Structures are given as structure tokens and as C-alpha cells.
Length: 417
Image (tube, rainbow, N blue to C red):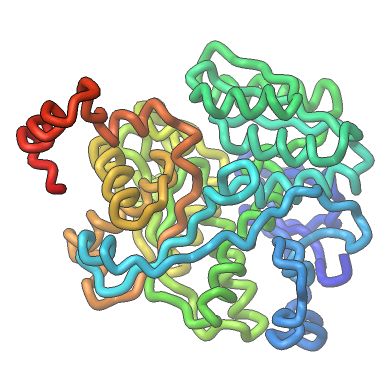
């Protein structure tokens, strides 16, 4: 890893060699989250926007100088990254902001932003000499790991732990990809605990993003990519839904990297959005207190994390960007699933559109001004959670095969033809 200096504990500052299986600080316990440190001066001297523009590889690996990987390690075969952005004036008007860009990360190979971290996990596991990779997940991290492992052609194995509330669509993905799936009767916290014990017992590679410092580096590619797609002209605000805190922390890390090497002039302010029924990071951000565990009481399963492990990085990222955090109700989320679908043609899962629901509330509360530019990341595809999609969408018109009856029902329902 030519451009990586070391790993540093964000709690005590102790440094470690960047070994592929180094996860936490030895002295700080759960608070000892590590951060990858780069030699920015060397990157600036050897890498440029012009060189990047000539790279024909559109996957996340195009940002290799800012990734903690060995160049010759085999990459997963799935095409992770290069997800589209859209300027969405109709949705911007609905929300009350002049300009809004959305980035649809639900179009990653397994349907979520989590592919970015899982691709890194597959690479780092090989560098550690480990063939089995494991994680606990509410669904998306699990399916992304299973898919990326499957793309290696049977030479690696995924063992996945999910809470028994995980949506059926996500479970089907895991099983189709051939993962060993363990459905845990309990909360996400209990699921995480069991996976952690199993990983240590059998020596598997740990894909839990809040534990493994390299996976945040995969997630940061969403902001590297967005910046490049916007021709390095960054918006005023960047919006993310927040669960365990890894994604928003990764996004900030990517923006920080870009500013340090001179690719962007400013870091957007971050708006982190949690569900009202499970918002421990927002509470910590607002009060300044240490994290207090909360119940996981929201339909947005991907952000239903009552004891997030990466809350320190998340809170630090939002504060460093001079951003804010806000909570939204499940009703707000369902309404935004419907609104975003009808105004943009993008179908996001509940957690995927929670950021947009938070943006709408932030504009209403004058946290974000109507004349500011915003970009929001749709973190997961709506087909992941069809049951909640049904709640948001409503029911179809039911009619006999009779044109007169159809005309009557159209009239009764106010359907214009």
C-alpha cells in the first residue's frame, strides 16, 4: 500500500501498522476505532485529476491511490460504483430547495451502497490470507458481502448473521448467492454479538464495517465518485441516512481526502438523518453526551441500529463539516418513498430515502436554506423491501374486463385520461 502511512486510534491517537487484519486499538476497547492515514503529499505529487480522467476503469478501483489495498490483489468481479446522478427539479420543488442532485446507489450490483465496503472486505481478506468472510447485518451489508464473495467463483465463503426481522427480499439474495445464513432470534445488537463471537472463534475475516477500519474506506468512494461526477463543484449540503454511522463517516473521509490533495475547494456540510424510532447518534450529536443504546423501533431496517459502533466517527464527521442531524418519522419515510418514486423514477428502500425525508424537514425548519444546493444519496433499492413499498404505494385499481366499468371507476377515482 504505497500511499498508506498507518492506522491511528481516533480515541487515544496510538498508531498501528496497517495490517489487513488489524481492527481495533488494543488499549481503548469498543471506542478504539481506527482510521487509515495517507501520505497526501505523495498522492498530490503522483496523481492528478487529468490522470484520473484517463482511467477507463469506472469502478471504485479508479480511486486506488486513496484506497488501502495492494495493487495486485484480485478484485471481486462485480462492477461496484459508477452509479448515476440525476438533477431532479420536480423533487427539489416539492422539498422547497432550488437545486437537488440525487445519486442512486441502489443501482450497485446487489442493490445498495454497501457493495462499496464489501468489495474492500473481499480484497483485504485475501491480503490477510483468509477465505471465509463474515458479518452481522440487517440485510444490505449481508447481501453485498454474499454477492461479492460469490463473484470470486467459489474460492471464498460468506457466513452471514441477520436478525430474524430482516426483509424477505434480502434473505433471498443471501441464499441465492450461496452464503451460510444464520437468522438470529433477537435484535441487531444480539446478532452483532453472536457474529463477533463466531468470527473470533473460527478466525474468519471481519466485514463488520464499524469494526474494520478498511471498510469505511470503501464507503468513502461514494463521495469521491459524486465529486468527480459534479466536476469537483461541490454542493452546499450532502445528505445521508444514518444507522451505525459508517457511511456518513466514510463520506466525510472521502471529502477530506479530496480537499487535502487539492481536488475540491470545500467540504459540503453533512446532514445526517435517523429514524425517530431509533436515533441514538442524533441524540449524542445534539446533547454532547456519550451514546445511549435505544430500541430498534422503525420500519427502515437498514438504519435500525440501537447500539451503533461507529457513532464517534459519525458525530465527528458531522461536526467537522459544520453540519447537522435530524430525525424523521416512519410516516415521513413512507411518504418520501412514494414522492421520490413519482417525481424522479427512482425507487428507494425506506432507509434509502430517509435522507430525502430529512432534507425536506431540514428545509422546512430552516436548517437548510431554499437557495442552497444539496445532494442526497439513495443508499438502497426499493425492491429490497417490497412490503414497505406496498405501504407507501397504495393499491392498484381493480376492475372487471369491461371498458364501461373501467371508465366509471376512472371517474370515481379522479383518474384523468
